[in-house]
Length: 480
Image (cartoon, rainbow, N blue to C red; front, side, top):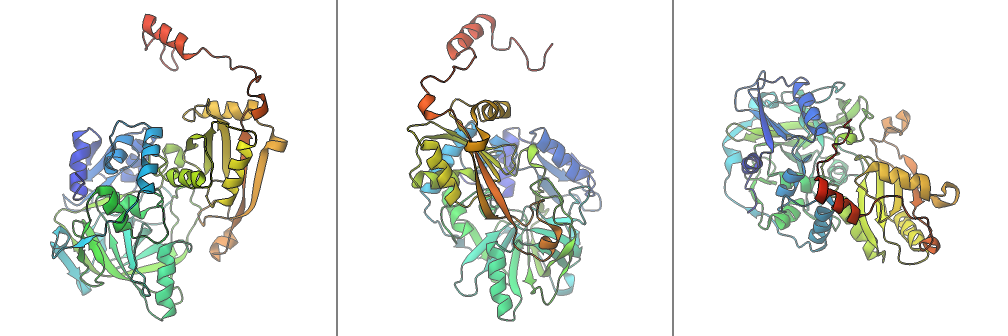
């Protein structure tokens, strides 16, 4: 059964031993440091209560998706799947997508308490300073930013960071290529501020649907429809008191207000530790969220999902966004892909290919060049390489690649505004940043597969024989 709300999700992960509670914690960096250390250790989700400066019961939960069991439970999958099995299962899910629209209900727990007008004060909710060099406290890191296209009525959910400015305003950073920004521009062109609702604690499936870690199969679908499809039943929503937008009925906290145009108002925002592992954005003038109303539950729980250095596991423990890339390659006629994964969660991708014919690798490289993806470096290896062992990948590059003829470059690829390589002047002007993608062929030549020197390693039969005789725990890694 799908989770009705964040609280049911917390009960589930508690039952499987995947959460730890901390009390008497400081929102000034202590919550952020504990979150980073747990992610680095592949540890549990963290629930923080009795936060310094806030009433008991006003809580924050973090590190939701950096554990396979928690992520798989969110996706309604068996929690014992390995990385490759989960990726293949997710490919099937997104390939068979059929929208399940939300259903509107008359009321919900999110409406238990309200603030309007002069009562509005977002500082009553804990907003941690997540990283040492962050320029402020961020109430929105695991949020849903809900907007409606004024021309089509399309409801879009995105996850964009929000920094507290004062009791009723925040700084919101939305990259210009995001759907949320494109919709806001339509209002600004009409001389209007963009109405917005921000939900700050939900069934985590909604957060996955709103982020770019779960790639979908079509442009401009409604994230509510996608979450309903994965959950197997519609998301229940209520009409926002001020915007009329559909907001999750079981949300913990919802802010409603608007975003004025950049010409009307900007305020300094950042710096903020970002998903590539840098404070690349710096402190720049960014959009302002004007909060005019707040709805919230008893003892609300805010989701914290701060970006961390990707070597700690990326935004999720499993690279689900690769499922869409794999599907797109197969639709282009590329067969033989056995596995793919990112290296240390960064913008580097490894693909394991079972070569079926001469030119197979080159066809894959050409297809990768035709598709838009963010990976600055891609390495193609044979399917005997263990993608879960970076040493094996580096070994393949060092012994099977011919860098001069086997490295292909794709020039003029549009980059991310958070890329640390973007020149500061281009970032300040919100200009276009282009970089070069490279693909390394680290496969054995197809014509030499029959006579390529065999790998010097004991096979499975001998390893089983040793394990059967001496036991599987004979040597521990790093032992003397």
